Length: 163
Image (cartoon, one colour):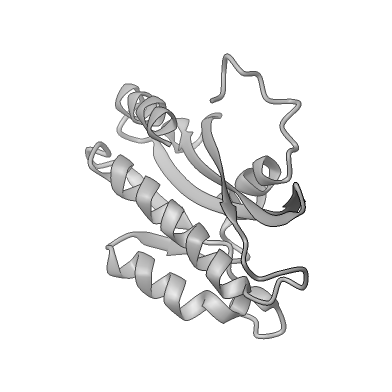
């Protein structure tokens, strides 16, 4: 994640003070070589002048998923997503120099959905760290940008423009 964060920080420093920064993380469970794993995608998005295009920086990493076939331990995975988003947010927050930043967490406030099991902990963690925090349905950096990376949908991303 260090390389991605260094590139994002460089882009933040080069952007105007009106630019905004969004951080999010999502994951996807897969069976790899007979074992369940989760692919985590952490994104840092620099929205140019908060109204023009953006630069998207991402990092992928794999971790064991101990919940087995039925995804019983959703909470553990969601809190790992939160951990990675907070880690990235802490790193870039030192370089914001007055720019606005939000941390987007892929949890749902509606108890009908499985991701509701981690809402209190994830929100408490991020807000306790002093971050502006958004959850579904406003958490687009996690729900869309990180989700695309976690699900391997990045053929349209130019490697020289995005990391």
